Image (cartoon, rainbow, N blue to C red):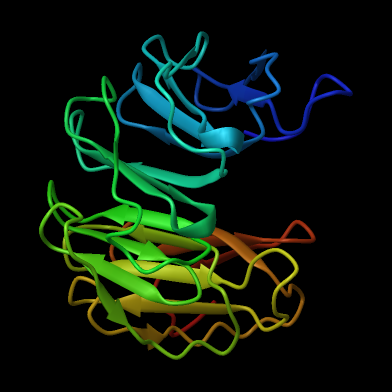
Length: 239
């Protein structure tokens, strides 16, 4: 998701590859509700993207066509979406907005007010009822979002921009994001998000980190601004 194809829209473009990145096709949603912030593909055909005005979009044909969830959600922007499997997912965004689905996106239920209000940049499903949300703090639920514990890891800058779980215990947070902070960091959990430790990210060539992906639990790729792509294959001992 990213740059606009129409002057009147922002970030309403999805770029799709079905040949391993050899070629790409630009798909425009042509909607003012499509300032898109996050995308999650569950399999080769089914995926979700979220954005401004509480918009939630779903594809069932690999990203070539998208349908907007028609029921009202919120006027706030959703900044992140994640799914544990085809049925259970969550989305999170501005002003404390967190919503969940338990039926593959057919219906969405608000959890807003059950979690402390924050500007949420990331959400990560651990299992069907457990998840982590990140804003200026880190929050964890183990009961489907009915209650949330506030975790207090100390990051060198804030807020974090992205959280990604490799499995139910191992995950990574990167940051900072947007106009906040200038000290890039990568932190890892091995206990399902209860504690976080620095992975000793060494580079000053970037001041923002925006996304993270796992190859294995110890083999991790991080991307940031200024075209930065950073890799460790030994759990952060070397980058």
